[in-house]
Image 1 (tube, rainbow, N blue to C red):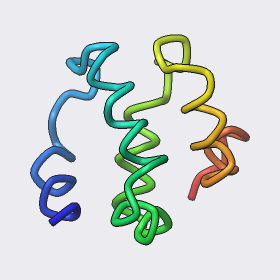
Image 2 (image 1 turned 135 degrees about the vertical axis):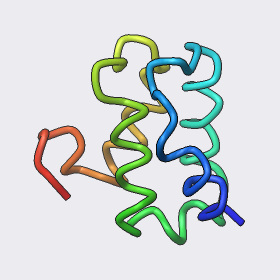
Image 3 (image 1 turned 120 degrees about the horizontal axis):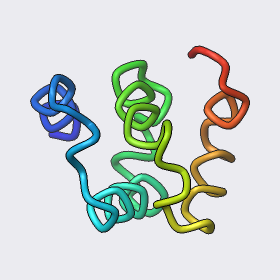
Amino acid sequence: MIHLFIDANIYLDFYRYTKDQRNRIFNAVTTNNQIYWIINDIDVKEFVKNIVEGYEHEIEEESLEKVYKLLPDLQNGLPF
């Protein structure tokens, strides 16, 4: 189900997400077991990367730190 959501949204303009939407997505990434189990799938990584890149200042610091722990390459700016 998560993959269907990501597939459906992958081509949307990521800049259209509001600050609240970005934080809700990041909260789900860090608290939802279904997402946790697939966090290293390339499409999930790309989705998270596109949500955060350039918008770090809009995401709650605690959520951002948790995502960086799950996906350390994201913090380092390295490609997946």
